[in-house]
Image 1 (tube, one colour):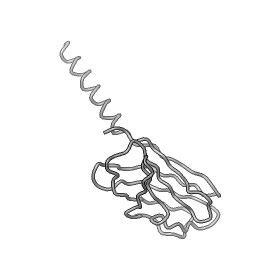
Image 2 (tube, one colour):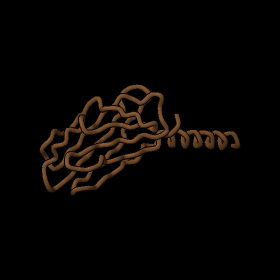
Image 3 (cartoon, rainbow, N blue to C red):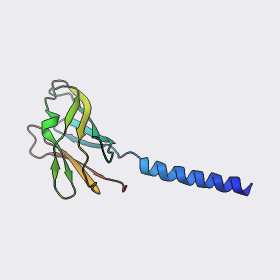
Image 4 (cartoon, rainbow, N blue to C red):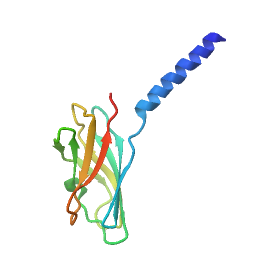
Length: 134
């Protein structure tokens, strides 16, 4: 009886550690000039693409942003990284959704920022995350 209880505790602790490591990074949202932008990190592997889901919404004018040209990742030391690709809705609608893909930042940094400069806005929108240690 004692051994099975100990085994159950060890399994539960291991599951808790794995769940904490695998916990997704939170979505970040910016609302300005009647346009909402939400960015959610989806996958940040050590090798392979880093993927960020982007959702844009407005009811004012069509969203014409060239997201591959207007976004960048910034590491904790101020280095910038251009996206590899935008995979999602094209320009012209009031609602857009897709994924911005980046090459992984190596060595991995403790924090990252995704900046997006929208036409007509004086400063880029900033979305920041602290990355879990690996």
